[in-house]
Image 1 (tube, rainbow, N blue to C red):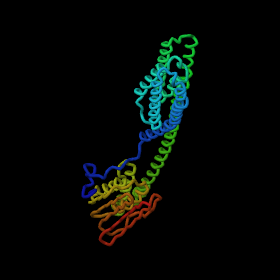
Image 2: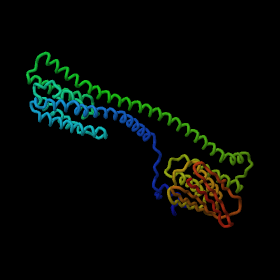
Image 3: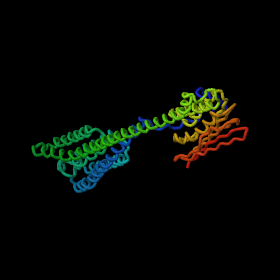
Length: 404
């Protein structure tokens, strides 16, 4: 007996060339990974709205408030060219950060933060004492939003550290200009607090909302996983019960007749029925095995039993069967299993498979006695045709499944 083309069935586990292994269904670990990916996607979608808002506020503030103030006080600034170049550099940093954020691409955070700190120091120095606390010194009110953009997704401590450096730079300019009166220091404190509190609140709020969305999505995914596992467990239990009923029904009649003494073990017909029951039992047991090619595995189980009973058999497999439901596989294999149990002298079992069709056929010498093939059937997953012929020399049994 052989499998594939001329390979003994006994050697199937010892080097037989098999078709490529199809992909198996995703296991629990893969399902958990998919659910976590879905939770992250929910968090990302929630975070995107906050990103859009932050980019819009930063650039709109820079253009609508900072630029008119700089242009209005241009002639009074200590170094207007420095202030103007710094404004352009900050706009470029904001544009780059905004595009990267909206695309979800990583940012060169440290480099951009260093550029913004240099801009901070340059504008404070170039604005002059007269515009130290005016809108023309636009870094007071607008630069914190650009800190927010370049640090998006980082821990809030990074933003607080950058704002602390901003406060040190501003305080150095205040002290450098000798503006050290109580009113001036109070104004400095209020400026810093008023221009920094809102960006910090947006930054922390966006991070909290994204984390909350991720947690809720993870909780929902976990609940769905528990429900899916419960349904899968119930389905597996029902499948086991159905398979047990089939296995019991296959052997029950023969065993009952033998136990009651109504059947003679020496009777060829009784032996044939026992062989048929054993072949069907072996095929039904093979249905629960986790293997790459379930149909071929079930047919090999029946063929191996026939080979052990002394029937020379050749199993030829061409192509890779598609993923078929259990009921379709049963309707394809049952008539062949019955015919194989009834075969004499030799047999040739052939499986020809493609993506949309599977044909299983058995050829063996004809002999006296009734046919033992099962009835044809159909399944909602696709029709299964059954043909059985005999001409006095050979018996030919074929089942065919076509995708509908």
